[in-house]
Image: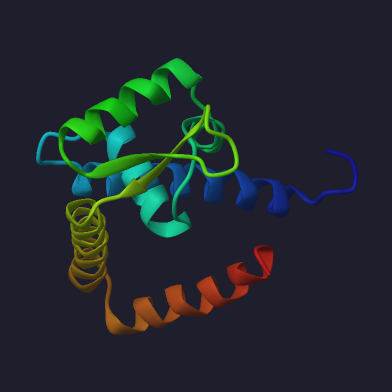
Length: 144
């Protein structure tokens, strides 16, 4: 990579790998109660982003529309989503969370947050956690 320091390339690679592993771990912590990781991801997306169409969910989750249709059907069978006709296009459906779906998504978020906080408490000293917080504030610049 021309013009990019070896340390930047190494940091980028290691950071990407670490975030991928952390994301998988967090998904596995929250997955339970009969939902697959894909179903949990869609439930979380609807909770964070609000109502959506099946095609928009498929694009956001980077899966085929047929795969998303199966995920949405499973969430519907669990009573976690509801479907309504799109007021702008009657051929499409708008998918949103039911009250049970919201509770489930909030519970999953809380479980993931608690797992991560507990792991940080158990595996790092106070000084190490301060270093992590300092590094995170630097990394926030990537998304600002």
